[in-house]
Amino acid sequence: MGGGPGGYEAALVASQLGARVQVVERQGMGGSAVLTDVVPSKTLIATAEWLTVTEQAGELGIGADGGPDGDPGALRADMDIVDQRVMRLAQKQSKDIRARLEKEGIEIVAGTGRVGPTISAEGTRLVHVELADGGERELVAEIILVATGATPRVLPTARPDGERILTWAQMYNLTQIPEHLVVVGSGVTGAEFAGAYNALGARVTLVSSRDRVLPGEDENAAELIEGVFRRRGMTVLSRSRAAAVRRTGDGVEVELADGRVVEASHCLVAVGGVPATASLGLEEAGVELSESGHIKVDRVSRTRAFRIYAAGDCTGVLPLASVAAMQGRIAMWHALGDAVAPLDLSTVAANIFTAPEIATIGVTQKQIESGEVDGAITRLPVARNPRAKMLGIKEGFIKLFSERSSGVVIGGVIVAPRASELIYPITIAVAHRLTVDQLANVFTIYPSLTGSISEAARTLHLA
Image (cartoon, rainbow, N blue to C red; front, side, top):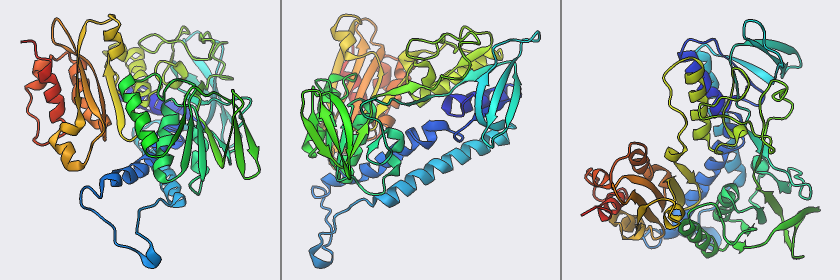
């Protein structure tokens, strides 16, 4: 139930292991991750990233010939074209996923599923499907995976209208760059959209209820990103909570808890998600839900109900597409008797697609400094890397954490362009418990940004 990363990856594994597989999906293959969340948002951010790259153009000796009527020829984004490309790529990815599943003989059922409450003598359950074309169908299942994801959280005092007050799923309705966008929420989603629209040319105000943006992330990384935001002209309102958002004709008013009012053309409310678990018959089937509505699962994705598994954002384990996909695969390996290892969150790499990006893996500096983990810390500025100098990269750093006693790599943070790619060697080191010496003694290309990872590892050598 659900055709997002958790569902379609599970379907491929189950098919590979010889099961007959049916996927129930109401929105389109790939789910919200492909159609309204990860793929479209990162496509939009990729366009914005091109514009941030041009910040160093002058230093690199690149200029633009003046256009007619004194136009300096500066790059700009056409939002209509950008959004058309965003949605076109999302639809293409969805079609590619559908084609892959159909090639493997997996049946895709368009509709909304509900788990039946009883188990038959043969150990099967019924899944009642309201078909997208208006009909109904009953599927007989020995194993059920619930991978229904999450939807944007809606505040009662800031209800979206899809035009001026928006959730992250509605941002692609815009055909023009907002004159002034207020982003409520400074977590990952809020920071990514705020940074992207700021780079695209919008005036942006970021409302953060905490002391800094990205409050749950590495402190040095968050401080750097907030500094970049301010340098690029963004207004960051720290320790400011939004009390209400109101539509005012062709604009919005964002009322803060202290009485201040911010007037703008648009407002994005990015205050987290709600698990899509209501009206699925889960509790009646014996599935245990948390107070927040998330499905409780163990490390092999089992729920408390017989042969019902769950994966992805509906479980609240970690809201990452990569984790959803792994939970789905683990569920099927376990359910169908293949070799399986329980989910290990210590080896999960995460990335925030700001400019520069923030990638993390393993333990945190806070855990080391608090004494929870006995570790060593090193930090190198990216700007001193020779390849970074050539590319005009001046902001960012690489952190590496190791066990003091053994030198085993236990975590890291990278703040740099393409940090999502650069974190991979550190992720391998954490997952396979490599030492800093093993990481340092692998050849790197000169000059390359990965050379700084090797240099960081050398500074942690146990002499």
